[in-house]
Image 1: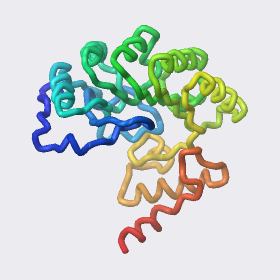
Image 2 (image 1 turned 90 degrees about the vertical axis):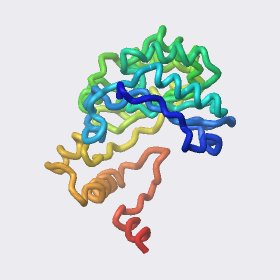
Image 3 (image 1 turned 180 degrees about the vertical axis):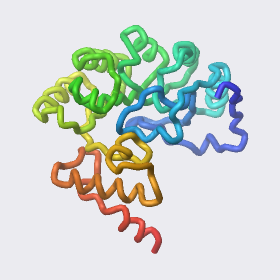
Image 4 (image 1 turned 60 degrees about the horizontal axis):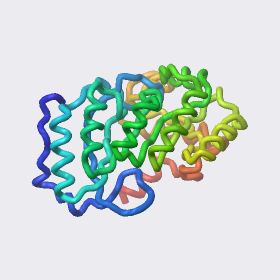
Amino acid sequence: MKTLKALDFHNYNVEKHWHRHHVFWGKGRGAELEFARGCPWACTFCNKTLFRNKFRERDVDEVILEVDRLIDRGVDYIYFIDEIFGVGKNVRRLLEAIAERNVQIGFQTRIDLWNEETLDLLGRANTISMEVGIESITEEGRDELNKNCKMDTERISELLIYAKQHIPWVQANLILTDHDDKNDIRVWQENLKKHGVWVSEPVPMFPFPGSPLYIQTFGGMPDDDAWERAHAYYTGSFDDKGYSDIQEQRPVPLVQLEGVAQR
């Protein structure tokens, strides 16, 4: 990653790319860039293990050169597709450089990577979309998911609310665990939503092939039937418990969908 030079986008039609990743209002021209790859955490539900495990970041100057080239092509929004944006040693330098440019940014991250000072910096860097994996509103639930989060729920709430004061879209994602009381979840959601933070309904945990959860659930590494097996387990386990508000409420078995696609 350190030796990866800036792309010049000569063979990519930037002007045709109007989608602004994870922005749900307005208009603009979007693009996606990668500052870092991999993640130093090992959350139970994450399927990064086989392909994007080791964390490494690119040279800031090369990334900024890409930013400038995209701006010159009319891009006004960049979404960083890093597994977890904000981990690297040079994130502050990257954000300070972006703050000097006429471009907006978005990303997904962990709230425990930030504090009031660095959230202020995100605001100056024209961040307009910040997606945050909270997963559980209890420390026990986060421990079960191996989040290795050092913050308590009250501090997490404080930072989410503070972030919303600087960033138009702040999203907090939840996963359903046995440690979270649904009434407590509702109270937590309503408090965050009152301050403008969008909070998902808890999503049942999916055993992504390659994730620690998949190995724990099925006792081995993925094979050719891994996705079908995981999907069948997921729908069988949670069909009577309900899905999130952003999920299909009557999911079709993966095997059936594959059969339709083959025809």
